[in-house]
Picture 1 (tube, one colour):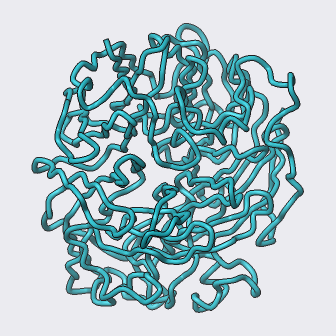
Picture 2 (tube, one colour):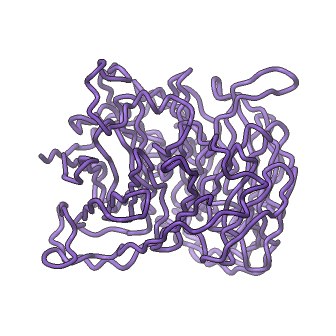
Picture 3 (cartoon, one colour):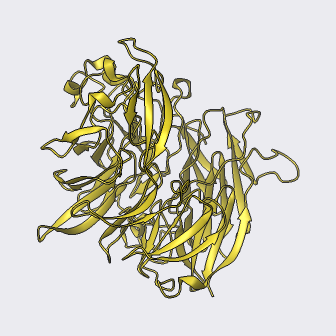
Length: 559
């Protein structure tokens, strides 16, 4: 069945959600994922985007340790056809859906998302594709292909499971639900307007009987987070990340309501969930116009902001802005991490993020109160000082100018969408660190600004050296830092384990493992540049480590 959900003109549209987190005893079908199981600590599977709700990407598995990681051996590898497959005849996918005519050319896509591992099945996504693979050898169980209407096929961040249903987003803005056992479509609903040039990449997040989805747009459109009923596909609520009505909070940080309603703040990347508060905490994207901020004076809330939203109502509980009045396309959409830690000897419920702008932040996840702000990007020069509130103050001299401004970090940021990790045994937050300089030239001095990301030219003029960094969440201090070779660094996410190991890619063709405590390099294998974040799980009692390079999966195992 097919349903279409239309965006209302209200800032918030709420519906009673109040469903229990788990079905009655005996109601669960074999092989399904009870949503209540996502409340449990991560064990031998990988059932959601970050493994569990905390965003830590920390596995308790201990077969792979600092002493044994050198014995990791390739178990299997498989290349997936991520382009447009034949729609009939040999090689056709098992199931075909979609609203397109099947004539939109789709080139091969890199595997950029999380790969769910549940009951010895791997659920893999690429734009317009979902596969179920056997976790033992990578053989195909089923394949679903979506016939797109078009849009930007930049990537897909993964799928979500709810009982025996699997959910993923399409580039042309549909939330699709499949039967996870067979790959047959259950329903699909529109989540954003295709004609307004939205495009969707985010991995949905299931919390109880809510499927949380975000989408994106690089023009002058508002961002929003939505919740859908996993059984019916009906929308439960929508939360706009910029003011949409005259009484919306944050409107005083924009010159007027029209500027705010076209202000961006897209929801690109999954957030984290705190069951104690029932808050979903996520980061938002840059304001628009992206580089010519003259027409939008003010901080431009709630763009480049860490936001906590009540999952049942869709109402904002608190916010903390990491880049006020951003003029560099430095989205703050990185996945944050929940940390149960100590500050000044007192236990605190915290959330930390390493932002694209080169600053590391820790705030209280119950109240949003600022705890730590510290620069971690070695060359970041865009802020003049730190406000008493903990927010960096942008320097007007570092905006694009006609003669050119020397700005760091580069447009891609010190980090980007690739997920970081946190190891509670070491107390360290692990992230990529990419340092460099732009010369930014203003090409459109019109006081109305430019649409989307226009109005500037950019020249990369130097590198400050790229690295992999371990940060103390309590202070923001870099505890250890592994310098990448020239030209390396960047594009891989992070995994850490109770075995004391942290995995990532070096940007020079190597999959690498470090000692999580001191940064010693323990192991590497040259398989190509990692395109997603590594994951780990048990199959037949043996720990596997899985990673993607382009269109190919590599599964390593302890022998």
